[in-house]
Length: 196
Image (cartoon, rainbow, N blue to C red; front, side):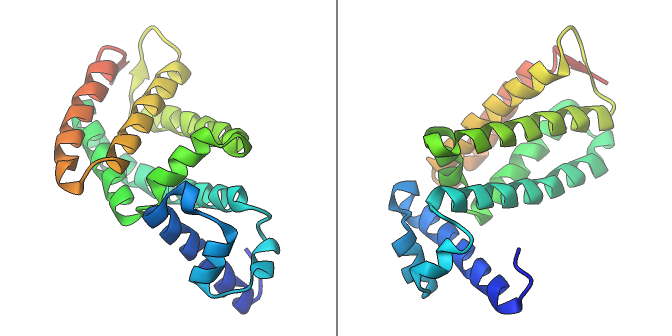
């Protein structure tokens, strides 16, 4: 993040425009010229920090990682009182709340998986979340039976990946059903493997 106030404001404008365009037009509608038009800045201003739209999506991935750490912290604060089923339900609700507040997230998520220039960063995000889920379960006193915790975290991430995609392709009024259905899937997968 730049040190000067004016530069920080410009970065914030560009990231805000990127989020807006991703949420409204998707990744294919995300162009540097569209971002500049929305942010009302010159295209040369973007190149100072981001050489292409992939770099902007990588910046959003970093913001998501920072934001989602707050979700883990919130779940860890109350998680000792919850069963695994309740914990996964709370997790799905918080993730849906995040997607509702950040309509850009499913599109950025999809771009991370499909754009060849973003795959290395996507693998890094996945590795970070795998390690964080292992820490999350350990913090709450859960242990994994018969399998490595990393394998459980990887599979959990795949299921949550599908969940985020489902949220992105569904109307908000259908989300309670998605939360219930994915809650059953997560519980069905985790309950035989994870004990407290």
